[in-house]
Image (cartoon, rainbow over all chains, first blue to last red; front, side, top):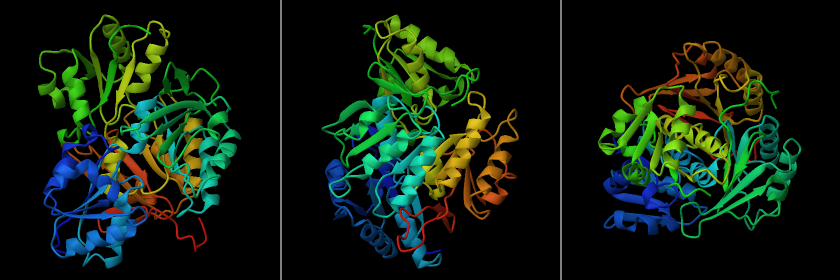
Length: 253
Length: 253
């Protein structure tokens, strides 16, 4: 194994400093080089003063990972910052993939520091929709074949998972959410409670409670996380929650 | 809506204080009454001094929720503490269910404070196995019919989800993990990377990397979280990671 210092891949949570863990804070403070999407630096500006800050655009994830490995191999303490949890569709797997391409002899160690993920955050703002088994599916077909995404949607709906949808829509990907709703409606009731959370724990936070039938026409963009209930999910006031168990006396769904 | 103060349901993460968010810390400090499983008080003893502490046994989750509602209705600031994230199989849905049974006029408000979940924590210690779509399934059939759990295991395996298994085994539930492995092996290769994390970020933490073929015979108990890779999940050194995308030029799984 290389003698380079380990690369820390750090999750800063949804964005609100009150959801940044002490471990993540310490990891950023300890770094000499901080690499992140440009938009993340505003929230951690006071932590990165005097450090080498490499701010890259959205879409430049591979470049971020490569820079991290290069700087670590040059002996620098590198921190790659992800929003949410870096292990859930975050930078951690990409940094590991990049390190793996060098081979075990050359690659630096990678340490992943967990955070509050977008899925956790959205669920808490909605109540407790993830109180039982759930599936997390990204609707982005930029790196995943759409037929596989459809297979996952149908499988998850058919087996009564609560379903969290990430990357539901963007300007370039307008039809996928509507198609996803069609598939989910094949095995889930139109009145199924659905929550849409935009900019969780950030300025402009918005929470919409709706139904599966109305979801395709809801105002949704790439800043939203969507949670679709299972057959037991209920509404109570403003909250959406999924009971932790099924009544074993009743017939199972 | 009732004029009772809101009940805060708070996630303290895996147990290590460095993974406790400032928001969760503040919520506990602000409370007059703290309700939790007995075992959680050791880790927050300095935060709850002078407060009314209600420590209940495992299995007394319903009682914890009922006490929370009673104390809130008596005008007290109540905090219910869950490990991990309170929205993911935690106390949040049970407190909401208990409040809902009172009806909207009487029930106190419920605020859920997110935390680093057991699933996030286990994944970070393993590398980045949750780099792509995943499903979370509890193998406990105490409150869920076993046939539904089997349906979910088969559906998730068939649609190539990474799969996190919670509550995999206990003294009373010894055969379920073996049966789950049989089902997963029907659509996933025996050499699929699997990680078993026991006591993540706690004293006695242990991380085991194994394969799906060997999982049924691994040392597993109720303190373990298991993550089973998808068809793309790879090993690199000590790490297990799932690439964030599929090579769209290749045939899809």
